[in-house]
Length: 351
Image (cartoon, rainbow, N blue to C red; front, side, top):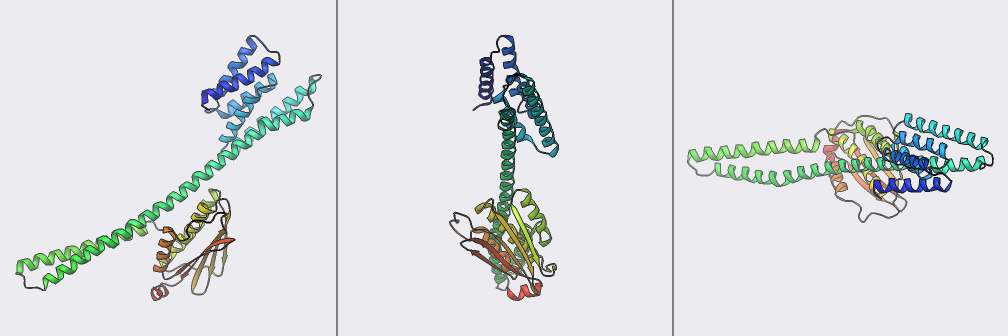
């Protein structure tokens, strides 16, 4: 329903209820204008529109549809504790005024009926609007987290492609140039071939630097895991972290970055395939290695495949750091486990 159609529907509904209650003439027309103006201001001034709807409800005893619409919009716009306090105070004032009117009016409805009407027409729309707003914010943050993960994966894919294709071609050029240098060529051609070989080696070195920059630009590490978990919790994901052993820093930057990516991949998979469930991140420091585990309840509908491009790239990253990565898709729990060495020498020995 469009905005103008909603305004017209609310105005007609509440005006018809007031007309059935016996109000006619210019008072009925003024009330219709007031309802229309309140609905028109609802998007820009949600709390002011809600207060106006409460005032009209006290004065006329109606405004049922107006209360629902403005209450939902006000709840949707609550973004701070101050907004919640203001809405609660306005609702309390409305309840007091309504009960006062009921007590002073002979033959009026029972107080509990008035309270039930307050709950249905004001409190429930406020809570519903707040719930919808929080769900939308939760989904927005989840999409941002997944988009960031996809951006990092795309950057790694470009780095791999550049290294594999361009690096191979430059290596061939360098080898062929070196072979021509030892051949029977005139001195001027040998110098030209030597320059070509030097240029190919320089291009390969620059390519290596660019690939490393793409892979490790602003690369987060083990110390950034707490911030990653905090952002996931702020996005609405229930994450619990467990630590055991004596925490020591990973001496190898590759291993530290791989530890961060393991936790990030586990959280991303939980958001994608088991949204709304709790995630447990475990960091266990052994004498020579760090064991990382990210576990969440198995989704009701298991994913079509286990070990997509994200897990494949993560396996390569962990292996390059001298570690191991395992995926355990059990019937009740999905667990991602990684072992990373604490000392770079061990990483070099195992790779």
